[in-house]
Image (tube, rainbow over all chains, first blue to last red; front, side):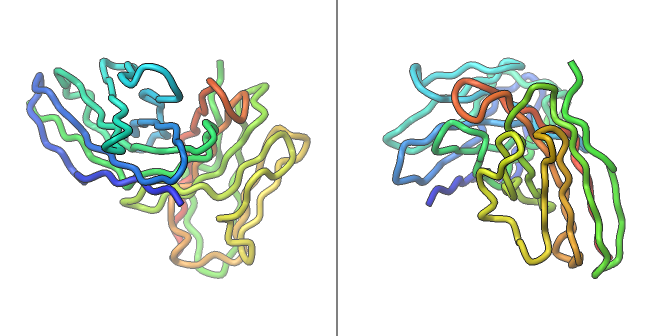
Length: 113
Length: 115
């Protein structure tokens, strides 16, 4: 069975500072990896996904993530955050590239001025 | 392009009552998902449709939950009878294809409170 662990429930950071949100997964088969963002009272929005190819994936809003198979990680990074990046971020995996996803518990990014 | 529409946005019911949620996916999207998101947790898949057929309902509590997607377009999710632990946000998502380089779009969800 697959599982996703997001190690930090909340990450506070100052505006314009860099941030890394950590995600580790467990799976006995190859997986596809996703990061979603959820703003208050909103649905989920896809930030980026890794299906194959380059392990460095660039997404929307200046975010990027790197797939590390040996460490079973898919950490999300942004070099300079804005107040508007304050939201909940979810890492997810799929075993067949569909959106039958297994989500982590989420990391709340809190950007302070 | 219109997004995934869900209604109602909020619902409060007493335990043992029944409730139904409605989802209208993006036009042309063959695959539809229902997720349950309990407060403080990530979403959990309840059921996946491909057109009007069920692909996966292994995590749907079938003793109280049911879902249908008539004509392969709109979908309804029903809970009967509701329990306190069903309090959650119910998210609907749709994608053009089931697999491959496609994207699933999520609706804003229906927040259910069972009292």
